[in-house]
Amino acid sequence: MSELQQQEKHPFLDFVKNNQKALTSAIVIVVVLLAGYFGYSELYQKPREAKAADAMFAAEKYFAQDSSNLVLNGDGTSKGVLYVIKEYGGTQAANLAKYYAGISYFRTGDYNKSIEYLKDFSTSAKQVQAIAYGTIGDAYSELKKNDEAIESYKKAGTFFPEDDGISSEYLFRAAALLETLGKTEDAITIYKDIKTKYPKSEKGFTADKYIYRLKVQP
Image 1 (cartoon, rainbow, N blue to C red):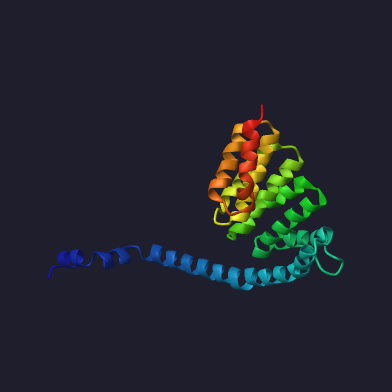
Image 2: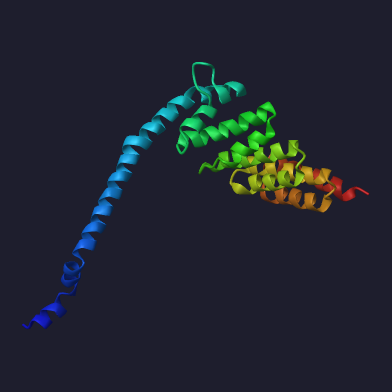
C-alpha cells in the first residue's frame, strides 16, 4: 500500500498528528475547567449553602410568628434574612431570604422595599411564586400605583391556575381595583373569568353578585 493510500485511509490520525499541540492544549483547558467547577461546587458553594441554611433557621421561625423586624434583622444572637442575602448571595437560602424579606417589608409598611426584594425572588414552587406576584400587587396598590397593581394581580392570578384559591383571589383583587377605577367592562370580564374557571372557589361562587351589580348600575 502506497504512502498516499495510507494517508487517505487514516485522515483522523493525520489530523491528530498535525494538530497535536492544539488538541493537547484543549484537553488541558477542559481538565482545568472541570477541576475548577468541582472545586467551586464542592469546596466553596456547598459549604456556603449549608452555612446560609443554618443562618436562616431562626428567621424562618420568626417569619411564622409574623415577627417581621426579627425576620429582617435578627434577634442579636441569630442573623436575619438581610444578613443572609448580603453574605450568601447566589445560594438557594439567599433567594428564599428575599421572599421572606419582601413579605416582611410589606407587613411593616415599607412597600417599595417589599417590591424590590420580591421582584428579585424566583422559585419553581408555583404557589409561592404566585403569592410573591400577588404581594407585589398589594404593595403597588398601597402605593396607589394602580396599573402596576392590576398587572401584578393578573400575573399572580394566571401563574398557577391549578390552585383555585390563589388564582381566584388575585384575579378578584384585579377586578375589584378595576371596578374602583371605573373600568366596569374590564372588571366584569375578570369576574366572569373567575366564575367560569373557578366556580367552586369562594370568589367564583360569589362572582355573579358582582357581575349583576355592575350591569345594573346606571
